[in-house]
Image 1 (cartoon, rainbow, N blue to C red):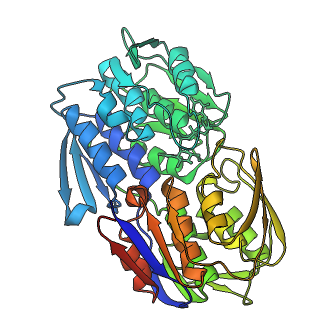
Image 2: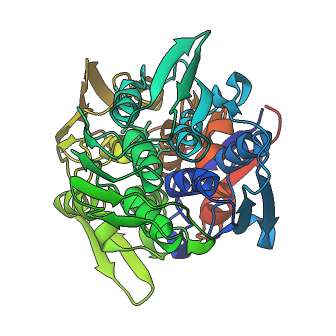
Length: 422
Ligand code: UD1
């Protein structure tokens, strides 16, 4: 298993290209299941989670053609062979559950394995199931699989979500495009990846209004057609690299960065003493003083502070002046990076969903272990600010969500390398 070795203390300078969003692509790819005609995604990220979704779709008979080194994906669901999402693939990635809505909508049946336990919380699927049942689906749990049928097809319905779940909103949005009549999703998630999915579905011929607000209205159509769609910028990769010069010093321009994707994050950066300026090509970031200042963070659904940037922000606050309080409201058990940061000399106390971070002058390099995707990158960032060497092991998590992280950071001057097999 690979590790990443980081030597701290080198300021970063230059430009970094932000990739297409993993979480958008993972919803856009299953949208192919809604149509017989091809869906072409451009600006696709090159990540192992995308390879997992490709394998899942291929197991259903979808033809996936990868071009330009993976940046362009052409998906065709013309000759589907299966409507069963197998446990062996689903267990690797929760987003596999996004085939449920489209399969039910076009094929009126689906058998989808439950994702099972996940390192950052229980992550059930009750919101997806209740919503699809409101649209006429019958869903039963047998042997760890959701067996779903919609005899005669799904029907449009009023679908109130008990929580603005990203995945459930995406599943219902896709399902509703081919349902009979009008679906109104209430308390819908408003994340940019949902807006991107709605744009793509509209390009395929869907009738959707209200994406990006809490109420999405979908008028079902008989069929969807071919489309070409560019994947929106990855706001989590963007936020992660925006933090890099805050850890290491220097100034970095994130190409493709957009303020509207990271507004709540930028407000916190400003309060922490970090300057973010819009440029013609993206966002430029520089810290105002040697050390950032403490800020309090509460993770929330969009447009609130994203849970997927909480670990990186916590790592940054470890060397800020003062005491910061971080509250994790989206996932239970999402502070597993805290004990690893403590091994690097951080002062963090965790009580339930709250972490209190008191800044120290300097972190010290150590051997640490990545426990999930965002935790792993937070340890790499911490390593760039630490004295000495940091070895982050189990970085397979990292490859799920960041393309060529060591190449991107070393191009900015960071001393970082991948070490095979340790
Ligand atoms: C998506 C993102 C993930 C991000 C998360 C929250 C993708 C592929 N992943 O995950 O990176 O961290 O949004 O922004 O887009 N829940 C239920 N029942 C359900 C569904 C969810 O209780 O049926 C709970 C979950 O356990 C969790 C919370 O709701 O505590 C948020 O989940 P959700 O918004 O559904 O996240 P995902 O779509 O899984």
